[in-house]
Image 1 (cartoon, rainbow, N blue to C red):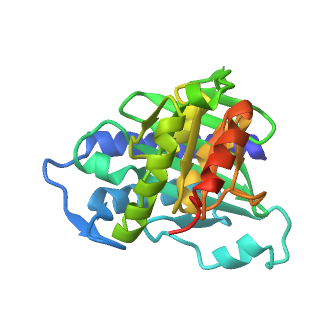
Image 2 (image 1 turned 135 degrees about the vertical axis):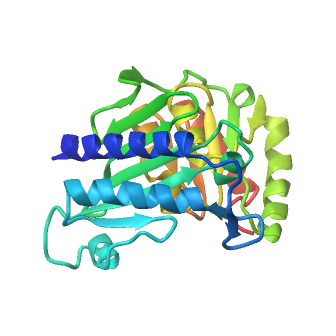
Image 3 (image 1 turned 180 degrees about the vertical axis):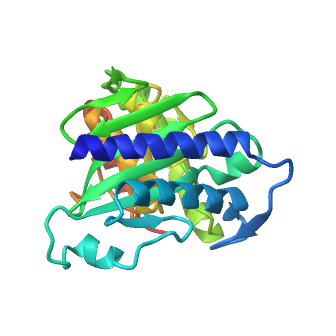
Length: 272
């Protein structure tokens, strides 16, 4: 079953990625969501509808939770396991992770699709059309980039670690995140802020980064890529033993995770 879910995700992600590249208009219509800097374009919504069609055609009984509002009517019951059926599947879809990059024609955005079974992410795909890179993972089956196995770097020293991060859209949160950043920068090799959480986590998975943290992510931002990173050997979590979440998402090579966690805990990176 899980392999079939992965196949559906791969097909839908590739189709959406190709659509977003080939059909990108010269001028995008831009609307805003939570703040004036939190944007959505007509291509986000069109790509999400395309992905939903692929999923519904392949698996008409499944639920979908999409960033831009594509949702089945029973996503709450599926997430909570209250519908009485074992093996229920919910798809977590981000049609363009890195919309601001897409808007500015910066080649750092991706299509992210994860399949959750009874509340556990079992398969995930992140497709970067600009680079022709498709990251994929199934729980317990390892992670791949374009069909080849990948793993995290061997970095064991936080002072030599290249760390990725991101910032929220709310001005107050950004100000707080910048304070945290000033505490991180002197301790690590350097910081990268590339603008797409899914690709940051996939960069960790294939040894292009050694660690990553961010506050304020949504489930569709990290569901697929978090699995890719975990299956590539990364440790993933929140602060103080809590699971990774929108409160704080921390991921790193096994040796870097604890010192990065301790640094972020001391900086209270999980509060605004």
